[in-house]
Length: 154
Image (cartoon, rainbow, N blue to C red; front, side):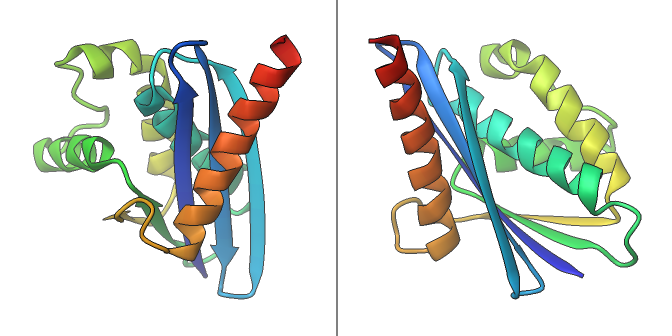
């Protein structure tokens, strides 16, 4: 089973409100999209949260299915860098050496736990706002969730 996951995050820093979006395509046949919002300090926090929510979904509904191959597409080179550092060091948790990773330690821990349950994950860096359908959908979902949360506060 091939699962393509597109994630994105958005944060209105001045208001401290962010959104995350997830778009999943299963075997090029079925698509699922969902999003949410919460308080945030920056958009990278929302990027982490989008990935955690996507992996949580896969863990809840798809783990146990034979031969799951997950491809996670993100426009966050920082997250890809952390993944490579973790894999290179053969660690079970993400390195938390800088402020951003320390601030997001709980979410990173969740990502590690979900990642351990999945047979195969390939992390793919995509260029943001370059017309990649899944990435554009995830971006739209994240921005819409953040906007909706902001409007409800006004």
